[in-house]
Image (cartoon, rainbow, N blue to C red):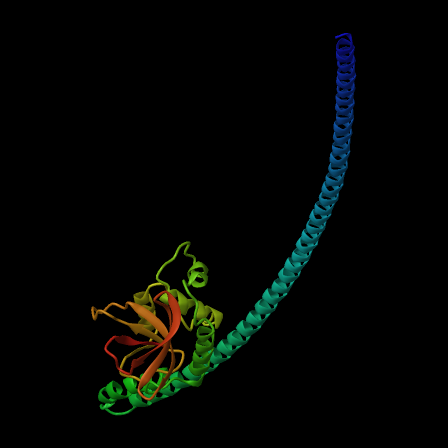
Length: 314
Protein backbone atom coordinates (compact mmCIF):
# COMPACT_ATOMS: atom_id res chain seq x y z
CA UNK A 1 0.00 0.00 0.00
CA UNK A 2 2.80 2.36 0.95
CA UNK A 3 4.55 1.69 -2.36
CA UNK A 4 1.40 2.41 -4.31
CA UNK A 5 0.96 5.73 -2.55
CA UNK A 6 4.52 6.74 -3.27
CA UNK A 7 4.09 5.80 -6.94
CA UNK A 8 0.91 7.85 -7.24
CA UNK A 9 2.64 10.87 -5.71
CA UNK A 10 5.48 10.52 -8.22
CA UNK A 11 3.00 10.24 -11.08
CA UNK A 12 1.21 13.40 -9.96
CA UNK A 13 4.48 15.36 -9.76
CA UNK A 14 5.52 14.08 -13.14
CA UNK A 15 2.11 15.05 -14.60
CA UNK A 16 2.41 18.49 -13.01
CA UNK A 17 5.86 19.00 -14.57
CA UNK A 18 4.51 17.96 -17.94
CA UNK A 19 1.58 20.39 -17.60
CA UNK A 20 3.96 23.14 -16.55
CA UNK A 21 6.22 22.51 -19.54
CA UNK A 22 3.22 22.41 -21.82
CA UNK A 23 1.94 25.67 -20.43
CA UNK A 24 5.37 27.25 -20.80
CA UNK A 25 5.61 26.02 -24.36
CA UNK A 26 2.20 27.50 -25.15
CA UNK A 27 3.28 30.84 -23.69
CA UNK A 28 6.46 30.75 -25.72
CA UNK A 29 4.49 29.97 -28.87
CA UNK A 30 2.07 32.76 -28.08
CA UNK A 31 4.92 35.27 -27.62
CA UNK A 32 6.56 34.09 -30.80
CA UNK A 33 3.27 34.49 -32.68
CA UNK A 34 2.84 38.03 -31.33
CA UNK A 35 6.37 38.90 -32.45
CA UNK A 36 5.74 37.43 -35.89
CA UNK A 37 2.46 39.35 -36.19
CA UNK A 38 4.10 42.60 -35.08
CA UNK A 39 6.90 42.07 -37.60
CA UNK A 40 4.40 41.40 -40.38
CA UNK A 41 2.54 44.67 -39.62
CA UNK A 42 5.81 46.56 -39.72
CA UNK A 43 6.65 45.03 -43.10
CA UNK A 44 3.19 45.88 -44.42
CA UNK A 45 3.48 49.45 -43.20
CA UNK A 46 6.89 49.75 -44.86
CA UNK A 47 5.56 48.34 -48.10
CA UNK A 48 2.56 50.69 -48.01
CA UNK A 49 4.85 53.62 -47.34
CA UNK A 50 7.09 52.67 -50.26
CA UNK A 51 4.06 52.26 -52.54
CA UNK A 52 2.67 55.64 -51.45
CA UNK A 53 6.03 57.26 -52.12
CA UNK A 54 6.14 55.63 -55.56
CA UNK A 55 2.58 56.77 -56.37
CA UNK A 56 3.42 60.28 -55.19
CA UNK A 57 6.48 60.36 -57.42
CA UNK A 58 4.47 59.12 -60.40
CA UNK A 59 1.69 61.69 -59.74
CA UNK A 60 4.27 64.46 -59.47
CA UNK A 61 5.86 63.37 -62.76
CA UNK A 62 2.45 63.22 -64.44
CA UNK A 63 1.52 66.68 -63.12
CA UNK A 64 4.80 68.06 -64.41
CA UNK A 65 4.23 66.42 -67.81
CA UNK A 66 0.66 67.78 -68.05
CA UNK A 67 1.82 71.25 -67.00
CA UNK A 68 4.55 71.12 -69.66
CA UNK A 69 2.06 70.06 -72.32
CA UNK A 70 -0.32 72.86 -71.29
CA UNK A 71 2.50 75.37 -71.48
CA UNK A 72 3.53 74.09 -74.93
CA UNK A 73 -0.09 74.23 -76.13
CA UNK A 74 -0.55 77.79 -74.84
CA UNK A 75 2.74 78.84 -76.45
CA UNK A 76 1.69 77.28 -79.78
CA UNK A 77 -1.72 79.00 -79.54
CA UNK A 78 -0.05 82.36 -78.91
CA UNK A 79 2.26 81.89 -81.90
CA UNK A 80 -0.69 80.89 -84.10
CA UNK A 81 -2.63 83.96 -82.97
CA UNK A 82 0.33 86.21 -83.74
CA UNK A 83 0.73 84.65 -87.20
CA UNK A 84 -2.99 85.06 -87.87
CA UNK A 85 -2.83 88.73 -86.87
CA UNK A 86 0.16 89.32 -89.17
CA UNK A 87 -1.65 87.57 -92.03
CA UNK A 88 -4.79 89.65 -91.42
CA UNK A 89 -2.78 92.89 -91.50
CA UNK A 90 -1.03 91.79 -94.70
CA UNK A 91 -4.35 90.93 -96.33
CA UNK A 92 -5.76 94.31 -95.27
CA UNK A 93 -2.76 96.04 -96.88
CA UNK A 94 -3.21 94.03 -100.09
CA UNK A 95 -6.94 94.87 -100.15
CA UNK A 96 -6.17 98.57 -99.69
CA UNK A 97 -3.70 98.49 -102.59
CA UNK A 98 -6.24 96.66 -104.78
CA UNK A 99 -8.96 99.21 -103.93
CA UNK A 100 -6.57 102.03 -104.76
CA UNK A 101 -5.69 100.43 -108.10
CA UNK A 102 -9.38 99.90 -108.92
CA UNK A 103 -10.14 103.55 -108.13
CA UNK A 104 -7.23 104.68 -110.29
CA UNK A 105 -8.37 102.48 -113.19
CA UNK A 106 -11.95 103.64 -112.80
CA UNK A 107 -10.88 107.30 -112.78
CA UNK A 108 -8.74 106.70 -115.86
CA UNK A 109 -11.58 104.98 -117.73
CA UNK A 110 -14.01 107.69 -116.69
CA UNK A 111 -11.64 110.39 -117.99
CA UNK A 112 -11.35 108.51 -121.30
CA UNK A 113 -15.14 108.22 -121.60
CA UNK A 114 -15.54 111.92 -120.77
CA UNK A 115 -12.97 112.93 -123.39
CA UNK A 116 -14.73 110.77 -125.93
CA UNK A 117 -18.07 112.27 -124.96
CA UNK A 118 -16.69 115.81 -125.20
CA UNK A 119 -15.17 115.10 -128.63
CA UNK A 120 -18.39 113.50 -129.82
CA UNK A 121 -20.43 116.43 -128.53
CA UNK A 122 -18.17 118.94 -130.30
CA UNK A 123 -18.45 117.01 -133.55
CA UNK A 124 -22.24 116.82 -133.14
CA UNK A 125 -22.47 120.58 -132.56
CA UNK A 126 -20.30 121.23 -135.61
CA UNK A 127 -22.47 119.03 -137.83
CA UNK A 128 -25.64 120.61 -136.43
CA UNK A 129 -24.30 124.09 -137.28
CA UNK A 130 -23.40 123.01 -140.80
CA UNK A 131 -26.85 121.48 -141.30
CA UNK A 132 -28.54 124.57 -139.91
CA UNK A 133 -26.52 126.73 -142.30
CA UNK A 134 -27.59 124.59 -145.25
CA UNK A 135 -31.24 124.81 -144.16
CA UNK A 136 -30.94 128.57 -143.81
CA UNK A 137 -29.45 128.94 -147.31
CA UNK A 138 -32.14 126.69 -148.79
CA UNK A 139 -34.84 128.65 -146.98
CA UNK A 140 -33.50 131.97 -148.30
CA UNK A 141 -33.43 130.57 -151.80
CA UNK A 142 -37.01 129.40 -151.46
CA UNK A 143 -38.17 132.80 -150.21
CA UNK A 144 -36.52 134.42 -153.21
CA UNK A 145 -38.24 132.04 -155.60
CA UNK A 146 -41.78 132.05 -156.99
CA UNK A 147 -45.14 131.32 -155.43
CA UNK A 148 -44.33 127.66 -155.00
CA UNK A 149 -42.44 128.61 -151.85
CA UNK A 150 -45.11 127.50 -149.40
CA UNK A 151 -45.57 124.07 -150.93
CA UNK A 152 -41.86 123.46 -151.21
CA UNK A 153 -41.29 124.64 -147.63
CA UNK A 154 -43.90 122.19 -146.38
CA UNK A 155 -42.04 119.33 -148.09
CA UNK A 156 -38.41 120.40 -147.65
CA UNK A 157 -38.31 121.58 -144.04
CA UNK A 158 -39.37 118.27 -142.40
CA UNK A 159 -36.92 116.40 -144.61
CA UNK A 160 -34.07 118.75 -143.77
CA UNK A 161 -34.94 118.73 -140.09
CA UNK A 162 -34.96 114.94 -140.01
CA UNK A 163 -31.63 114.88 -141.85
CA UNK A 164 -30.22 117.48 -139.49
CA UNK A 165 -31.21 115.49 -136.44
CA UNK A 166 -30.55 111.86 -137.27
CA UNK A 167 -30.37 111.28 -141.02
CA UNK A 168 -33.21 108.74 -141.51
CA UNK A 169 -32.83 107.30 -138.03
CA UNK A 170 -29.13 106.47 -138.52
CA UNK A 171 -26.97 107.19 -135.45
CA UNK A 172 -24.04 109.45 -136.18
CA UNK A 173 -20.46 108.68 -135.25
CA UNK A 174 -20.55 110.65 -132.00
CA UNK A 175 -23.61 108.80 -130.75
CA UNK A 176 -21.98 105.48 -131.68
CA UNK A 177 -18.93 106.25 -129.54
CA UNK A 178 -21.10 107.31 -126.64
CA UNK A 179 -23.22 104.17 -127.05
CA UNK A 180 -20.13 101.92 -127.04
CA UNK A 181 -18.91 103.52 -123.81
CA UNK A 182 -22.35 103.09 -122.22
CA UNK A 183 -22.51 99.40 -123.20
CA UNK A 184 -18.99 98.78 -121.90
CA UNK A 185 -19.84 100.20 -118.48
CA UNK A 186 -23.21 98.43 -118.27
CA UNK A 187 -21.70 95.04 -119.21
CA UNK A 188 -19.13 95.38 -116.41
CA UNK A 189 -22.00 95.44 -113.89
CA UNK A 190 -23.69 92.19 -114.99
CA UNK A 191 -24.37 90.00 -111.96
CA UNK A 192 -24.86 92.82 -109.45
CA UNK A 193 -27.63 91.93 -106.99
CA UNK A 194 -29.76 94.42 -105.08
CA UNK A 195 -28.48 97.53 -106.91
CA UNK A 196 -27.40 99.26 -103.68
CA UNK A 197 -24.44 100.88 -105.44
CA UNK A 198 -26.79 102.65 -107.89
CA UNK A 199 -29.73 103.73 -105.71
CA UNK A 200 -27.39 105.03 -103.00
CA UNK A 201 -25.47 106.97 -105.68
CA UNK A 202 -28.78 108.49 -106.81
CA UNK A 203 -29.57 109.61 -103.23
CA UNK A 204 -32.02 106.99 -101.97
CA UNK A 205 -31.50 105.69 -98.44
CA UNK A 206 -33.34 102.39 -98.95
CA UNK A 207 -34.05 99.88 -101.71
CA UNK A 208 -36.13 101.12 -104.68
CA UNK A 209 -36.94 99.88 -108.18
CA UNK A 210 -33.54 100.64 -109.67
CA UNK A 211 -33.73 99.95 -113.43
CA UNK A 212 -33.82 103.67 -114.36
CA UNK A 213 -31.30 104.52 -111.64
CA UNK A 214 -28.94 101.93 -113.12
CA UNK A 215 -29.18 103.50 -116.60
CA UNK A 216 -28.52 106.95 -115.08
CA UNK A 217 -25.50 105.62 -113.15
CA UNK A 218 -24.00 104.11 -116.32
CA UNK A 219 -24.57 107.43 -118.15
CA UNK A 220 -22.79 109.30 -115.37
CA UNK A 221 -19.82 106.91 -115.49
CA UNK A 222 -19.56 107.48 -119.27
CA UNK A 223 -19.67 111.27 -118.81
CA UNK A 224 -23.03 111.60 -120.61
CA UNK A 225 -24.79 113.44 -117.78
CA UNK A 226 -22.18 116.18 -117.60
CA UNK A 227 -22.43 117.05 -121.30
CA UNK A 228 -26.23 116.80 -121.34
CA UNK A 229 -26.36 113.83 -123.73
CA UNK A 230 -28.62 111.89 -121.35
CA UNK A 231 -30.93 112.70 -118.44
CA UNK A 232 -30.61 111.60 -114.83
CA UNK A 233 -33.92 109.92 -114.03
CA UNK A 234 -35.36 107.41 -111.56
CA UNK A 235 -38.83 107.11 -113.17
CA UNK A 236 -39.10 105.63 -116.67
CA UNK A 237 -41.75 108.11 -117.88
CA UNK A 238 -39.50 111.02 -116.88
CA UNK A 239 -36.75 109.60 -119.11
CA UNK A 240 -39.14 109.21 -122.04
CA UNK A 241 -40.35 112.79 -121.60
CA UNK A 242 -36.77 114.11 -121.74
CA UNK A 243 -35.92 112.16 -124.91
CA UNK A 244 -39.13 113.35 -126.63
CA UNK A 245 -38.56 116.99 -125.66
CA UNK A 246 -34.98 116.86 -126.95
CA UNK A 247 -35.87 115.17 -130.25
CA UNK A 248 -34.11 111.93 -129.35
CA UNK A 249 -37.08 109.54 -129.19
CA UNK A 250 -37.78 106.73 -131.69
CA UNK A 251 -40.57 104.17 -131.78
CA UNK A 252 -40.06 100.41 -131.77
CA UNK A 253 -40.15 100.08 -135.58
CA UNK A 254 -36.47 101.04 -135.98
CA UNK A 255 -33.46 98.76 -135.65
CA UNK A 256 -31.79 99.97 -132.44
CA UNK A 257 -28.08 100.62 -132.14
CA UNK A 258 -25.75 99.73 -129.21
CA UNK A 259 -26.06 102.22 -126.38
CA UNK A 260 -29.68 103.21 -127.06
CA UNK A 261 -31.95 103.32 -124.01
CA UNK A 262 -34.84 100.88 -124.45
CA UNK A 263 -38.17 101.41 -122.64
CA UNK A 264 -40.78 98.70 -121.97
CA UNK A 265 -44.53 98.67 -121.33
CA UNK A 266 -45.47 95.26 -119.88
CA UNK A 267 -49.17 96.04 -119.41
CA UNK A 268 -49.84 97.93 -122.64
CA UNK A 269 -51.29 100.87 -120.70
CA UNK A 270 -49.07 103.50 -122.33
CA UNK A 271 -46.85 103.92 -119.26
CA UNK A 272 -43.30 102.61 -119.14
CA UNK A 273 -42.66 99.92 -116.51
CA UNK A 274 -39.00 99.12 -117.17
CA UNK A 275 -35.88 100.41 -118.92
CA UNK A 276 -32.53 99.00 -120.06
CA UNK A 277 -29.60 99.56 -122.42
CA UNK A 278 -29.34 98.03 -125.91
CA UNK A 279 -26.19 95.89 -126.11
CA UNK A 280 -26.53 94.84 -129.77
CA UNK A 281 -29.05 93.91 -132.45
CA UNK A 282 -28.49 90.96 -134.76
CA UNK A 283 -30.50 88.26 -136.56
CA UNK A 284 -33.77 89.96 -135.65
CA UNK A 285 -33.04 89.90 -131.92
CA UNK A 286 -32.35 92.81 -129.58
CA UNK A 287 -29.88 92.02 -126.77
CA UNK A 288 -30.11 94.24 -123.70
CA UNK A 289 -28.44 94.85 -120.34
CA UNK A 290 -31.00 95.63 -117.66
CA UNK A 291 -30.80 96.54 -113.99
CA UNK A 292 -33.41 95.36 -111.49
CA UNK A 293 -34.44 92.35 -113.59
CA UNK A 294 -35.57 90.19 -110.65
CA UNK A 295 -33.36 92.51 -108.55
CA UNK A 296 -30.28 91.53 -110.60
CA UNK A 297 -28.34 93.20 -113.41
CA UNK A 298 -28.46 90.74 -116.34
CA UNK A 299 -28.46 90.29 -120.12
CA UNK A 300 -31.80 89.63 -121.87
CA UNK A 301 -33.13 89.52 -125.45
CA UNK A 302 -36.30 90.40 -127.36
CA UNK A 303 -37.56 90.14 -130.92
CA UNK A 304 -37.35 93.32 -133.00
CA UNK A 305 -40.64 95.21 -132.86
CA UNK A 306 -41.87 93.25 -129.83
CA UNK A 307 -45.11 94.82 -128.57
CA UNK A 308 -43.70 95.20 -125.04
CA UNK A 309 -41.11 97.67 -126.41
CA UNK A 310 -42.35 101.27 -126.23
CA UNK A 311 -39.41 102.87 -128.00
CA UNK A 312 -35.82 104.06 -127.73
CA UNK A 313 -33.97 107.08 -126.45
CA UNK A 314 -30.65 108.16 -127.95
